[in-house]
Amino acid sequence: MIEFYNVSADIDGRNILRDISFRIVQGEFAYITGPSGAGKSTVLRLIYMDLIPNEGMVIIDKYSSAKIKNKEIPILRRRLGVIFQDFKLLPDRNVYDNVAFALRVTGVKGAAVKRKVLRVLAEVNLGHKRNRFPVELSGGEQQRVAIARAIVNNPFIVLADEPSGNLDEQASFEILNILEKINRQGTAVLMATHDNTILKRYPHRVIKIKEGLLNK
Image 1 (tube, rainbow, N blue to C red):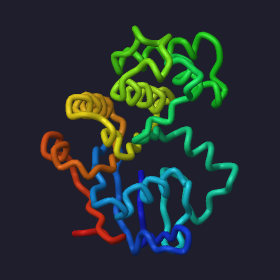
Image 2: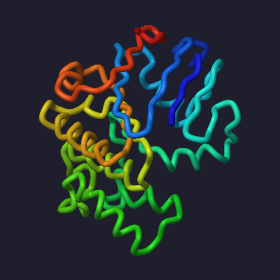
Image 3: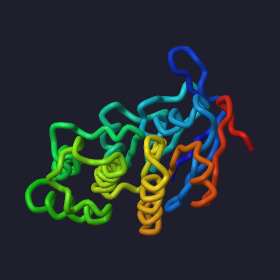
Image 4: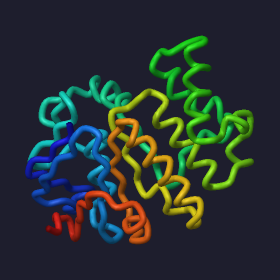
């Protein structure tokens, strides 16, 4: 489903990843770990094709970094769910419209939007706050909105970049419980984190990166 073959990547002339190879299979839950600056976020950017490797190849489903066309990248991204540490919600739209936006940009209309949005808001226990704006929510609630937005298009994998990095312990565990539930329903999860408490409490396969290299 996701394959890295001898991938190296530079950002602004600086080498971030060197000769990285690994696979994520359908329905898997895996962590990318390593210190700040190790290259965790770069791996995720390579998956949603925000970066193209300098060497090697990334294969995501039927798409290859060596052959993908610019017009195909948005199509690929619609099949991925991405969650960021800083939520990236639209501040001028309420919870419902933040989630609905992910559907509307793909052409979903009418009653289908309402049905899908209310379903995922119920999954993250925020249906009762669908008319609230991001500024009215706690950090944990904002991240749950971001998760709802990430899964509303039924992605085959959720990419989570330090999703608990700005949250307290209780909110972090709530986020991980939701990601665990999503994974049990068949969606793969790849999460970048350096939180050892999470790794111990929610054990899954760990892909370790240090100084741009896989730390085997």
